[in-house]
Length: 307
Image 1: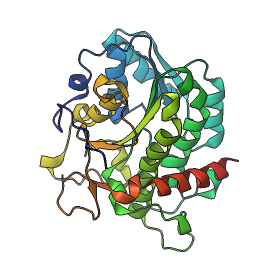
Image 2: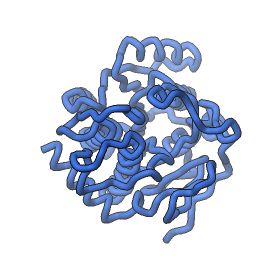
Image 3: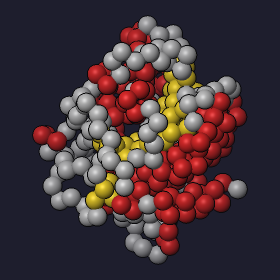
């Protein structure tokens, strides 16, 4: 196993700090789910560094309000809004068809968490798996050519330490046999997102596309609407500015140039673990989430859904 990547930053670092001095002029970025939480802060940081940023959002009206605010705060007029619902395959297809030219940064940020009842989405799959993973898988495939055209692109996927609650259960992805478990389903979708980074990097790194996944940390956002709010004890929580730091670092920092197929938290690569840490705040990525055989199998299963 290769040595863990270490940066000069830590869990207290902010998005502004990790991108300080970086010039993204001429770079184009797409951020999904950028109407609230760390998505907005990620967009702000990239725009301040000079990137052309497209907020790919389910509600364009809300996106336009965010974009107007970001243009005023950053002085960057190149902040656009486009409709994209990653839970709707038709919407993903339309977004990709409308995109023209190179794409330097694809940031898969949108997501849902712990739906209280079993719902089904793309291809009849369990909704969290369909939205958090399958929609972004389809988006990555649809934008593959644009990423290749960039001549050095990055795909960053916001996963979660929640992946430690479940591997991808290939024999029952959609709870057709198991009783539905909201946390388990969320965990499975987040493991799938890490595996997406692993396999995308294996397949596409030769084309100059590097892919990584991350855990942003415990941040109070709308994501916890079904959980009654953030339950993590105060000492382990992050601000939104801190929560966006790892996403921004992986998307833009020259320090991580040429690095891919890995899982980061607190702006550093996480160590592999073979059991879920019982203590909060202990970093770690499950071995099953980085397993290349799992990653290739999931890619093949997912490609079959789309064809």
